[in-house]
Image 1 (cartoon, rainbow, N blue to C red):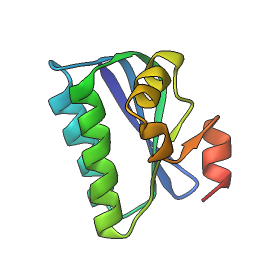
Image 2 (tube, one colour):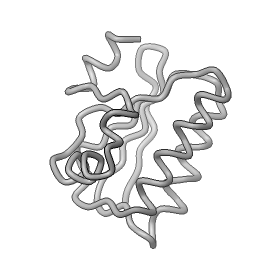
Image 3 (cartoon, helix red, strand yellow):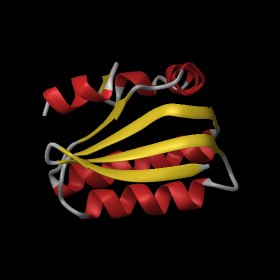
Image 4 (cartoon, one colour):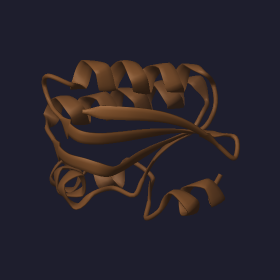
Amino acid sequence: MNHELLDRDGALVVVLSGDVDLDSSPEARRVLLDAVARGRRVLVDLAGVTYIDSSGVASLVESLQGARKAGTDLALVSVSEAALRVLQLARLDRVFTIHATLDEGLAAG
């Protein structure tokens, strides 16, 4: 897994790519929770995620819970088909706010 942190229009954009699995989910969790801790709106770009397992999903869920507790917003943008399938199977597509594109996510803020 690779990650990148961008500052766009007042939001922090966490770009994840590659496999978000048992090996990489601790790093994903750290990156996501650090972004949430900054107290700003967080958009998680999953366009480059080729595979995500339950540990990766758990990192996303924990980050969403942290954002809600902190009174900030966390949304997913540009979710790859592979990641979307997993989110849909777990019915988490109904829990997360999901925007089709980064620009749409930025505009929604």
